[in-house]
Image (cartoon, rainbow, N blue to C red; front, side):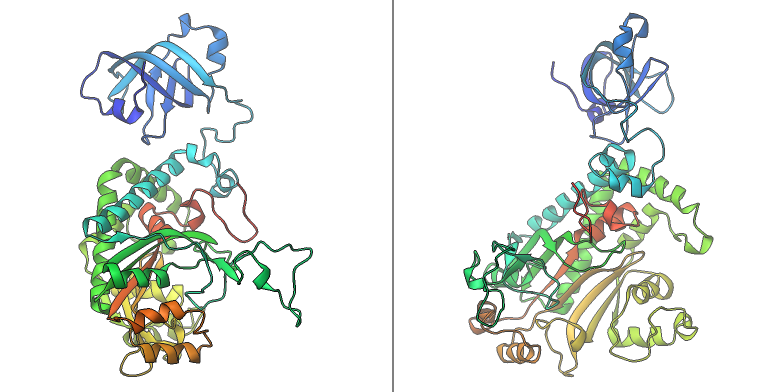
Amino acid sequence: MKHTKVKDLLNSSKANYEVNAKGWVRTFRNNQFIALNDGSTINNIQCVVDFENTPEETLKRITTGAAVSVIGELVESKGAGQKYEIQVSKLEILGDSDAEKFPMQPKKHSLEFLRENAHLRVRTNAFGAIMRVRSVLAHAVHTYFQEKGFVYVNTPIITGSDAEGAGEMFKVTALPFDNTPRTEDGKVNYKEDFFGKETNLTVSGQLEGETFAMALGQIYTFGPTFRAENSNTSRHLAEFWMIEPEVAFNDLNDNMDLAEDFIQYVIKYTMEKCQDDLKFLEGRLLEEEKSKPQAERSEMALLEKLNFVLENNFKRVSYTEAIDILRDSTPNKKKKFNYIINEWGADLQSEHERYLVEKHFKCPVILFDYPANIKAFYMRLNEDGKTVRAMDILFPGIGEIVGGSQREERYDVLVEKMKALGIDEEELWWYLDTRRFGSAVHSGFGLGFERLVLFVTGMSNIRDVIPFPRTPQNAEF
């Protein structure tokens, strides 16, 4: 008999027919009531065992974590809080679980303990909910761009270029470490390496994406990116996923419009598809916040915060205006900021971004026209010669969630900027070709997918919204 998902059984429009359900035991009470979950929903289905006619040996094997198959009649439940239950006529243990050793017992576990058991944490309500939300968000990303006629492009994971100019990259090599070939001046001889040159794991697919936008009009990438940044914080990962659209003929204003529309679409889509999971995660967040001092608690519940982003236009503010606001702010004057804002040109920190969003404007904020010397080489220089057409979107609780810009389409200006920063023109000859042959205004942005999942789920640590987090000193699983 083919089994039916728990989600479909709970949503059934009829009762009193024979069904087969398979899943993992969450709890087993009074030798009679199995709470069964198969991952299709946050809700369990209650399976009522006829314990008087079930062998004692079988009952002992119905433990938390065990995989079971039940056949029985789907009937209307007499218990509160559930529409249907299964009156079990046949039960089979598919996989035993040692009750003494199974780490995911039905009790509250710390998030740190769950991270240490990342291979099993998805069996808990919270992580099942987070990963279903993540999956739906990913689908929403593709749905949005595909419906708007964007072409999905898979940019290289192994690359010879550093798009950000940050230099914090993981090297890729096939050279032996114990007998590395050297040049005459003692440097590693990458000509003998697999690719014949120095290569790294990508930090961004943007540069390659731009070349496709200049032929296909509008493209997007959605893939893994890597940063060898030694940041052991709740907001950083060494391996994460990036969404990067690039659009020919879009200027900075078009870029801001696209980013705002995109974010609102994927959040709305996920709220419609994941109501049970988000309701559970909202309750989890409320419980967690009870232990915090009042001043540290969120002003809004999770669903209220998500609706807030949907219902409010993002406030657009120039970097210069933001600096004036921050310089005159109470926390700056009273030296409450860790990084005091004294002058124009300062690189904004998370505390400044969150102040602008959460305290000053009380809505999502798009900052634009940043100083050229704190932004990447490919951003379009403004007429003032000191700012670039960059934009960052700031969110409550997160800070920066999107970074983007109008790209520098003028060949001469781009070359000058590369020279000033010591970027090798020969290395990026192919990128410069897009400015030589049919150059046009174009723009794009990057959105770290995990930061979006973090915001939508209400979690506070980015390690809890990716299946197997990669962080400094941690590549377990």
